[in-house]
Amino acid sequence: MSEYTFLRGPADWWRQAVVYQIYPRSFADVNGDGIGDFAGIIDRIPYLASLGIDAVWLSPFYPSDLADGGYDVADYRNVDPRIGTLAEFDSMIQELHKNGIRLFVDIVPNHSSDQHEWFQAALTAGRGSAERERYIFREGKGENGELPPSNLVSHFGPEGWTRVEDGQWYMHLFAKEQPDFNWANQEIRDDFLKTLRFWSDRGVDGYRVDVAHALIKDLEGELPDRDSYALEVMMGDGTDKLFDRDEVHDIYKTWRKVFNEYDPPRVAVAEAWVHAHRRPAYASAEGLGQSFNFDLLVQPWNAQKFKETVTYNLAAAEREGSSTTWVLSNHDNIRHATKYGMPDNLNLHDWQHNGAKSQLPKIDLVKGANRARAAVMFELALPGSTYFYQGEELGLHEVFDIPADQMQDPQWFRSGGTKFTRDGCRVPLPWTSAGSSFGFGPGGAHLPQPSWFGEYSVERAEGDVDSTLHLYRKALKLRKTLLTIEKYEWVRTWNRNVLHFKRPNGWHCITNFGSKPVKLPKGEVVLSSAPLVGGKLPADASAWVIAK
Ligand code: GLC
Ligand code: CA
Image 1 (tube, rainbow, N blue to C red):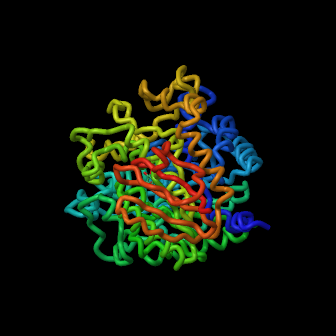
Image 2 (image 1 turned 45 degrees about the horizontal axis):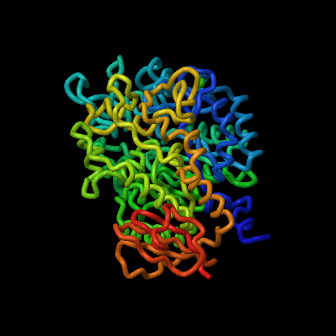
Image 3 (image 1 turned 90 degrees about the vertical axis):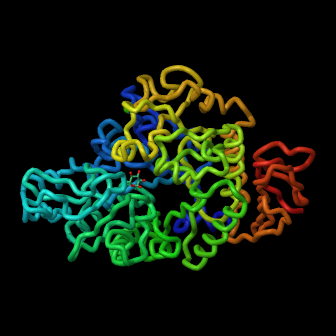
């Protein structure tokens, strides 16, 4: 058995897997209702296979009122009829597996949709009922309970409590259509185990666990106040009443038991925005097994910041026995080709969370695209798994001109437009350079596509040997042959703007974050993100070199 097959053996296939995130409603639409569907995904399996990915992760496809793009789940064991049927789900997974692609599904345990039958039952059953015990209902403050039980601001802003007809209030860390479950209730715990078995029995290989750090809350005594909904506020250290409490891991131990009932064991990755030193518990082999590291996604294009991120996370992964994840884009963030084209001195975080109403920063599209190409080669050469977001393989840019009346993101509405809209990265994909919704489907797209989308279409990219799409394919193909044990070593470069690391089999990756071309080490250049200039690696580029 070669080292490679050993690494991708049945049980640890996920450790260095490349996972492609599909946002189902925006991927491909077959029946022409403007919403992507399973039939669309099935149609595009040859495309997915041509990329050379190991797995697909589907954002929620469950029945939903779409108050938060499907992260408001009305039925955990069913499919949104606008997306497809369970039978189509089965065909899709079968087709994916036939093509050597595994499947992750999103699981959303912190909250359901307010349309979930349990929440509806809680509303009817009234105060003190067993039905209300499945969620977090409390009496309000003030003479007639007219004030919320605490000053809790939700993540999307503003209030985190909503009052129901009989006067009680329920807690929601996100939109009001996303009531938080009461995980102290055994019924909730049992029901999620049932859901995990339901999808695992259908062949699902892994789970991406939404807001994995929020399930357990300390609601004894004074209820928690929160005057901000910034992400940092969600990052506790075990002492916070709402986030990242140690007891949450008891839940994931019971999930792990279910995962291990299967062969190969089902796997999971936690979406837990916690401090880096709190991640190992989520990634433990007795827990979910892997936890997202979003550190690269939040870094600006800067050699030293990239280096620190890699060094820290790979050391942590080695200590904890898990493998780390590399992520540059997802459905919650500005597409990285666009981000890297923004001014280097911009405080992007501040702009995204407090300043979206102000002027859009100036964007250098070419610089952004070059850096994005360099970044993907950088991450793919590292030990660990890599998560792509649909469209990044096209070098696709963020859409900033969606008219307010067509936006869908509750983060934008609830913050009064102060926070950026995540709709800009969720615009349906361009498959063709012209025609109805650029090949997304025959009936338009649920979010408007800009006129320039065709230039980034799959069709256009297919016909251009130097396109980002072809770069992704070449990189993934090479990576399969080069992949080795999860070790790496920094090589000194004498230039603060250049990063160079090597893997034990002589695979070197060099990235030039600076503005001047740099020399490459001796060996065969097997891939570069930009043409070499007189044998040198230009600015904003990466090369893979096999040492001789
Ligand atoms: C996660 C999802 C995001 C969603 C939120 C609430 O952060 O990635 O899209 O809005 O959870 O479910
Ligand atoms: Ca459709």
